[in-house]
Amino acid sequence: MAERTGQGTARTKATPASSRSTRTQGQGRLRLVPTPRRRSPAEARRIARRDLALLCGSAGALTVVGLVMVLSAGSVSAAQGYGGNSFWYFQRQVLYAGVGIGAAIVVARLSPRIWKHLGIWVLGGATVLMVIAARPTSGTSLYGASRWIDLGPVTIQPSEFAKLGLVAVAATILTNKWSKLDEPMQLLMPLAPIVLVVGLLGIAQRDLGTTLILCGLVLVMLFAAGVRMRYLLIATATGLLGAAVLIIGETYRRTRFFDAWLNPWADRQGNGYQLIQGLIAIGSGGWLGTGLGTSRAKWDFLPNAHSDFIYAVIGEELGLLGALAVLLLFGVLIYAGVRIAMHARGTFERLLAAGIIGWIGLQAIVNMGAVTGLLPITGVPLPLVSFGGTALVVTLVGIGVLASVARDTAAAPARSRGSAARR
Image 1 (cartoon, one colour):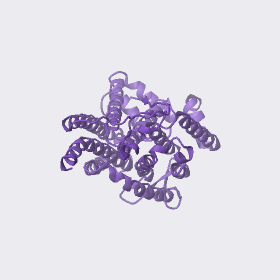
Image 2 (cartoon, one colour; image 1 turned 180 degrees about the horizontal axis):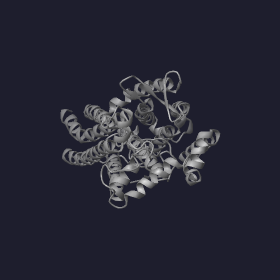
Image 3 (cartoon, one colour; image 1 turned 45 degrees about the vertical axis):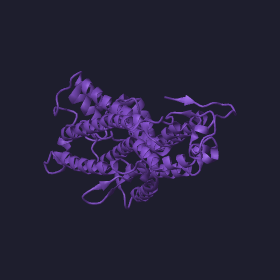
Image 4 (cartoon, helix red, strand yellow; image 1 turned 120 degrees about the vertical axis):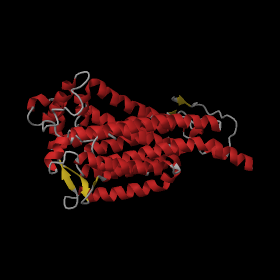
């Protein structure tokens, strides 16, 4: 899957100018996603159908699992908070899923190259909204973070739009600089300032988890683009150092890291309470679970049972086998995204697909890692499964973008053959 180009100065036969615009002329670069070989229209359609089946099947199954588990895990807190209506969270999630699926279908029918132009507008709008959300007078705070904007009937989370916008903008920048990615200044400008601004806004919202996802998805894209490993290691080390400073510099982050994660049993009724209750819920499920709808943790024992810690309720009600099934579905989804990136016809499309699946995969790992105690609790939802309107809609739009890349791959050989025939 990865290959390394030659180090010498010798050249192969001269290539057309259009081919020279790609990084196949680059020396000594690790290419995660090599340039795809030419395929017949029938073969391209067959590959695209397989990729789309894996993508839509896994994403659809995860969305259905999310709806069922939001109904189960959120029934008690919904009844307590919304006048006895235990279906409140479920009804909202069904509405969000409908909007997201509709948007995904529309996006899937568009050319993926439209995101070269839409990306900057999505990211710019999300940045403005993140500034509004970060202000105490205009944003809505919950659990110490100020990352929502209350619009009455709905509440939006601008940082979710920033993920999609950042993927599109980063893919555009890396494509435009494809032959210059070995030059540090070309690599840094203007991508580094953009990531820095978005990251600082995430910190201003007191949302370190989302900030790490935003920075992490860019690292995934840089890796997929074949940026030299020493640059990636420097960027990773810088990011980890910055995260350590942020954790140590804030009391609540320091407490969450050292007390709630590393030693939760020292304060089992305080800082370690949520993680301990999540682990108890998972342990109570055994192999086959206690049964759908029979969770004890959701009865005011486990905070955020329907959102950030929904994976713990899955482990309790569906058991280890159910939790592994959800993990397997995410594995299939990531596998489908990687296949779509590998088979995409152009550099921009490959990086766009790699960025989206990197974002969804990283977020899933961070959430499930936090619930199982392998990673610190960061307040990041489980994609497609946790309750949350903005997160669900934007993630489904991301799935639609992946589908558009796959559909574009299937249509490319037919377009090329038609163009050749006209010439």
